[in-house]
Structure formats: C-alpha cells, structure tokens
Figure (cartoon, rainbow, N blue to C red):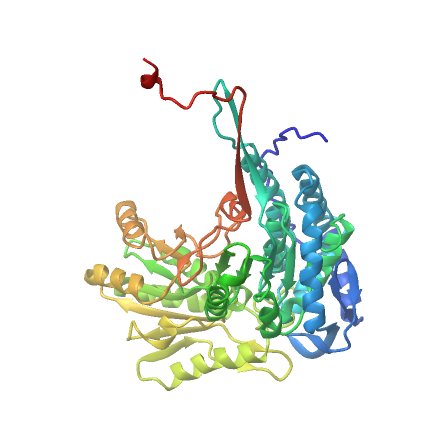
Length: 542
C-alpha cells in the first residue's frame, strides 16, 4: 500500500449558478420540477447497503402545497435500528483501516456527482420537499454540500500530515484513528448540506454512521444517500433510517458502540441526548464525542452611524430568506431612535416588493414554512404581538395554510426589550426591533448580550469604525459568527466556519478543520532505535 502523505490544496468554492430565464440550467431545473412533481417515490431504509421496506409508512408532502404527496417513506422499527448499528460496527473494521486517500476520493466523487450529474435532482428535491426557492436550494443543496466535501478533504490532509518531533534515537509519529464505534448522525430539515456533512465529516476520518434524517427532509436526504452509494461508499458505512426520533434514540444511545453524536436541531433535543449519554456512561467503550449546533436568537445591533439602506437590505434578507428557518436568521434588532423612522420606511418599501408563494414560481422570494407544527408555533408569536400593548406589527402578520403553510414576513416593534419575541427562538419569518435612545447605547449592548441564552450569530452596522470595534469586543461571547456591516446569515465553507456556543452548541465549526478533529482519536507511537541497557541516571555513573 502506498502510504505517502498527499496534499490536497484548498479548493475554490463551488460557483453559484444564476438560473436566468432561458439559460440551460434553468431549463433543466424546470424540467426536473415537472418530473418530480408528477411522480411519487417510495423511500426505503438503507441498512448495510440493502434497501429495507418495513411496511410502516408515512407521506412526504410539499410544504407549499401540503395535499401534494411527493413520496412514501418507510420507518425503522427496533429490529432495523439494531441492524443499522450492527452494520455500522461491522463496516468500521474495513473503512477505518483504508488509506485515507481512498476515502477522500469517494468524497470528491460525491461532490462531483452533486454538482454535475445530479445537480437538478438534489436541487429540486430540496425545493419541493423543503420549500426552498431556486437560489436558496442552489447555495445549500449543491454548492455548500460540495464545499463541505472538498474542503474537508483538504483539511484532512493537513491533519494527517501534522506529526510530532523525532530525535536521533527515536521515531515519533501520530496515528489519527477513527473513533472506536459508530457516530449517530441526527440531521435537520432546513439544510440539505448539513445532512450531508453530519455524516460525511465523520466518514471522511474513517468513522461509520447511523443516520436519523428529519422527517421533513427525507426526499432530498434519500437522494443524497443514493449518490453516496453510487460514488463508491461501501455497504454499512452510512445507514439511513428514517423514523421516530425517540425510538431510534432509545436503542442507539443504549449501544456500547456509540462513539459520538453529530447533531443539528433544537436545544431541547440536544440537551436530552446529552443527558441520556451521561446516564449511560458506564455502558460505553469510550466517552462519546458530543458535537452539536442547536439554534440561536440572532441579532443585528445598529450604531447611529449606520447606513440605513444597507441596514434595511441586510435586515430583510437576514430575517426572511428561507422564511427565517435558518439557525442564523436575524430575529431581533437593537436600533437607535435617530435612525428608526428612516429605517422603517426603507424596510417597508422592500417588504412591498416581495411576493410569497410556490417555489415553482421563480418570482417568489418567500415560500412556505416547513409543516403545520411550525406554522402554528410561529402564528402564536404573531398573535401574541397583535394582542400586546407592548408591541405593534410594522408589516406582515398575515398567514394562511389552506393550500400551503404560508406566513407573511412579519416585523414587530416592541417597547419592551424583554418581549417574548425578543427572547425566544421562533424559527420563522418574524423579526422584532427594540428602539433605544442614542445616548443609552451601552445599556442597549448589555441587553443584546444578556437577553438570549444562545450565542450563534450576530451583526453590527455602523460606519464609525472605532465604535464598531468597541461593539464587536463588547459582544465577544454573544455570537460564534459575527458580521460587520452584513447580515448574520450566509456563512460560506472555508471562509466563515460556522458554529456558536452558550445555548447554541459546542462551537466545533462546521466548514473548518476543528470539526474533523473531533472525529479522530489520536495514537502516539514512539519507536526507540537503541534501547537503554542501564537504569542509572548520568550523575549516578560518575
């Protein structure tokens, strides 16, 4: 076997296609939208490389047209969950011992398949199944998925070549072993790329996974799994088991072979998993690695020197792209009284230009929220604001689920900086602003830092660079990804590694080398060429 260290330079990010009317990519996309809309797919479990049909099924529907069935998926029971664990443990023996460049070649082929042969397939399944418009699907399902894969290969090459010093009588080396066991991958609905990366970053480093996809993103995730297999991923390295989170978690967390959890989802669910792991510590062969990103209550803090047009553009996009269903979406603002009227007029002007509806109409900037439970939760915050004497609806506030789960982008102004929609994560198209007096900016900064238990993303707007530097420092622990004069969303792999701390997770920075390091267990190996034959110290020999 050739065990040479191969260097993979940092790649370029995958270019985002424009999908202009009449362009080849637009025509291919529209053809694929028609094809997927007219066919119902049956989705099995995939365990040890084999398709498993349990007969316990449910439907995948379009959020923007919830009577339209896209797929029927099979759900895992106890037998299938245990089979997935066994398949992952068995596959680990060979996969973890492969030369890492073989694993890298499969990762790069997956990226190539996603960006070429299956670009329309993965884009459209994300659009229809998760209600993303063309641009939001393109930057997620295709570009970010490929970026994670390509950059992770480069980061892995840097990790593997990092070796300790040796001296004249010894050779020291570091072996970067996969974790001993399997990784439990729990993926969310909102990003197809995250579902891919939650599996493939541990897999790149030699691990195997048991994958519980979100029920509202099963269509795109199933196609991902099929692409993984076509690229050459061996049987059992990833085991795809849709189904009940509580049932799957019960059996996975009870396994002695659980080596780690790679998670994106709610704070409450991650806390539950962590507590269960803690309760089961005596069962495990190793302490499981807990890597999770759980959400945020992301802010925009405005200095009086900010440019209002730039601010309004960023606030609207940052709050309402993909219906506010991004962990990084702006959901609270602190704005000085001196800018409020101009800002309000400008963001209302933007709001009037936006249309809402089906993803198949490329003119719709806003589409549907993911499901009925999310719809009802978001509406409860809007109704609370409507009935409160401490808040007013600046624009939006309407909603309708007759055809799809549509909610108007809603902007709330409150006189209470601790108002419910300023404090609690909503995960929908709701932005709340608190107007502070210009002279009370330090108090407003205290509020921004202390209002939320989260610490994911945040932004500051201002042209006074010294003031901006001060605000950046004051809010140092308020956000793991901090933006100056930009919206707090849109992190790009290789450029803004993503993650937060406090209640937002373990801050292991997806899209950077930090995440990959979590999926290895290093072994230091020392070889001595001429071992000593005398136990005495030098001064004892005088």
